[in-house]
Length: 188
Image 1 (tube, rainbow, N blue to C red):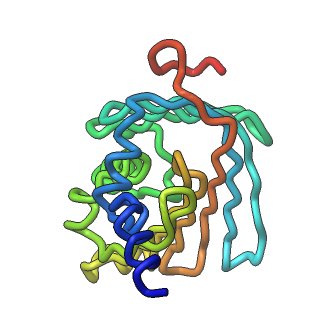
Image 2: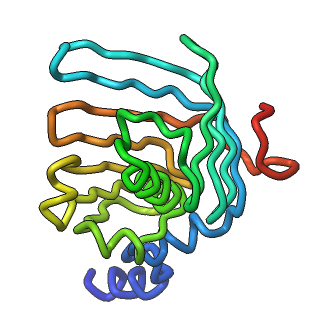
């Protein structure tokens, strides 16, 4: 009985035996650009209320995310590593804070674990078909704003949940994701 089990384990590819952050980064790096739709729910702890918005996005690795809100209001936000002037103040604060949030979002969507490991403790669970990554801030300054981030996905990142230190929560669900035919713009 043991011999057939050993043969079966030897037959399985190495990636089936262990799924690492390196494997996940390689998977996410296969797509340089991505378009799709999103639904985001923001829970405000102080008001015990939830705000829901919907829209579409375009993402180009290491360059930008164009985030187009369609309802309940219409707005267009652009997140880049260098310029984040349009980021919602609820996520950022001052200019430096907004730039850090833009960089964080690009790192999260791109699965840049090396950059993220500088600021977070990372814990991966699951496998290539259904994975989860929990990120807990290392520095006290970051913990003052953020208690943790949870990412879930399969082929792409499917869900992102950001838990603020004040009890607020932002949950983003991505769907209808596909590589776009052209560059990043705001059109669906």
